[in-house]
Image 1 (cartoon, rainbow, N blue to C red):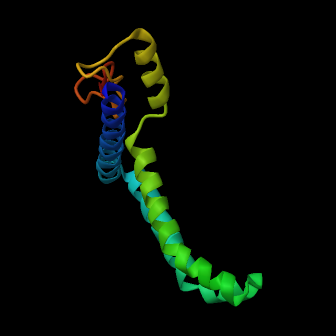
Image 2 (cartoon, rainbow, N blue to C red; image 1 turned 90 degrees about the vertical axis):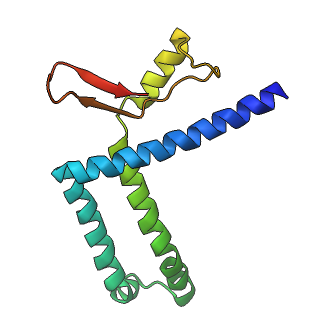
Length: 134
């Protein structure tokens, strides 16, 4: 029973970590003009592709059935792309490495879980200080 509870706790922690990373990605997108431009550029490209989907289908010679499947899948692809960008913007490139290093060091919380790195950024007042949120 204890192993099942631990697995449930780990799954819940992973879900919370993913939601926190998406939230951090949204905040980073709003705060950073480069990330905002990247997100807007992605959305504009998606909108252009959606607007010219009939022309693209004719140029590529896609049949009716495959075209209908692509038309149904396109909104899901667009949403998954936005989620992927938010996740990318919300996390540090070394998140997994930090998690593995903390696990190797035996750094755990009271429930026995290894912490996940949510976001890492430079302090506004002192550029020599890096703040990490676990």
